[in-house]
Image 1 (cartoon, rainbow, N blue to C red):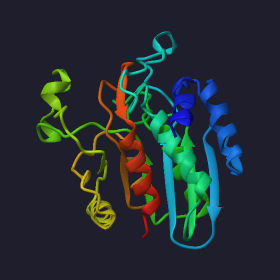
Image 2 (image 1 turned 135 degrees about the vertical axis):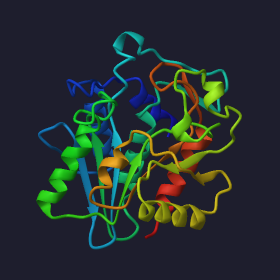
Image 3 (image 1 turned 90 degrees about the horizontal axis):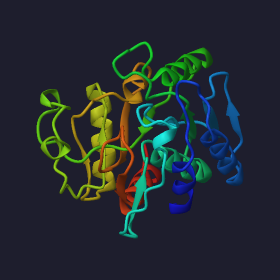
Length: 265
């Protein structure tokens, strides 16, 4: 996992131009794991495996926050060998999605999507998460409705305040509990059906450091909820997601992968 994550993290991808070496690297890694990938006209990568129901869509965005840019795209190696560092949003989600696609579903059918553009303009609803919107349009064209959509992405530690009261201009230590030992969170849901399904899966997994919380935020899960129950899921990462030098204990990603592999609807 560490080597794959490092390979993705060091390669840039722009959600605006939809170009960058990360795209070809992900295609190569999928092929090495026996996955047949299709690239649509919007540079989104699709892999489909299995048959029948349930049908689960796993989605991870390839692009990097444009405020980082290629000039700041430098490697970051924490001194702690159990921790990985760098620009992890959303190299981590892509890494987990590649490993999931390689393994395939234990039952039913799965679609693994690597979206080209999520990060562009979070305050412009017509531009934000536009690749997820394209995925939804394609699924509707196919008359395909997943039983669940999971946006695999990094997430923040425990919130100090209700999400509606967050002042994003404050230092991170005043927004989040930086001593939070949680590995992963289910969040990003916008309706009760999605919340209940997330709670059911987390309860069944039974890991003391995997939690469900109310934190809808800006995420592709909000777009996928137009067609199916949807939530975001991913490991806790420390640091500013619009800056380099993000940090994550590798154990967080390993727990996330175990949860995603264990999901049974």
